[in-house]
Length: 211
View 1 (cartoon, rainbow, N blue to C red):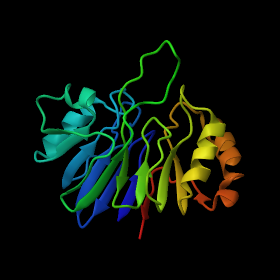
View 2: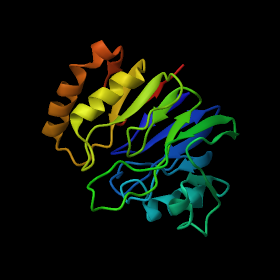
View 3: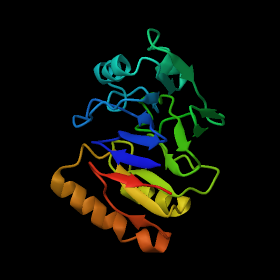
View 4: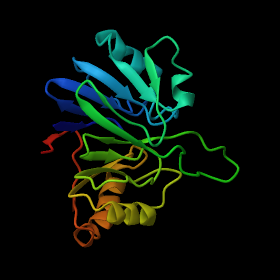
């Protein structure tokens, strides 16, 4: 299984020539639409995770792809083939085993309504919580760790990394950081990686194999 990381919160997972795209949003300007996309997973409705133009481009080149997301995402996408998912759902799709966790976005502020959000575990190996720190209910090999957001404190990201205890962790959700800001944040998180039993490394624009 191959994982390719793009700007901000977007990445792809490729297995046996089939591709899943996760969170193609408005901050992802380096995304090149692949062929053989079987599913697009949208964790929640915010524009940095769901860009309609980019989504339309993916579907135009992959007509049979299904879009998976919480109800307030799929409700907006009536012209596409969709499947609504909730925390607790588990199923196989086109050879990929998928498990979904949680139902709510992390709180930004008590006066800002909380939207729906699902985390996803792909092939029992790669976990991504979307905009939340919802724990998976299984041990995972690789963690896509959000590290910068209005809802996020870096101490909470570190504690989440430690609690998940994945073999490998890569940062995501970081378009609001400058280049220097990414260096500072990575240095802080990496200080705790060894104690968490994980390797923490940035893989922007890189494809990695997960056994």
